[in-house]
Length: 113
Length: 118
Image (cartoon, rainbow over all chains, first blue to last red; front, side, top):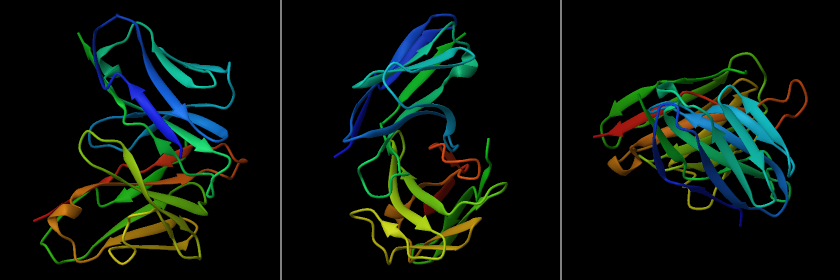
């Protein structure tokens, strides 16, 4: 059974204080690992897709990396507007209905001014 | 990115009534849509996969007769919560996969619908 575990559950940072969020996963055959941002009361907003170990993607202050067992979302010099819940999800080649995602529980990130 | 619209964004209903939530892909065709449920401070749990022109595939533990899904066109899927009860109160989110430019894998999500059953 595919599993996704994110840590920490919650993280408070000062504006400008860089850090990383972790996503550990277990999957039969990784088709893709996805990062989403979710604001309160809203649907998730797509950030990145990573397909193979060693891959990295960047968008503004965010950088996502992938190994065979985990992914990191690095946030550099964050701003208060980066406060949100960050969700990690995996797609499995093996299971039926390959498009469906299995989500982690998310990391609630708060950036204090 | 692709736009998925969900309506209504929030609804309050009395126990025993039925509520319909619509999910539309606005600028692309979605042969497959997904319905998720999210409880406060918890992650998204997949309820069912909706395929255009065929019956939905439900995840284990999800009542088919309670949560009716219809995917009548390539741009519209509906979720009807029948005979709603307070325990059905939740945040329901739909998503669709973008295939128009080749399979990219990521899903695009609607804004979600908050259901409160009194």
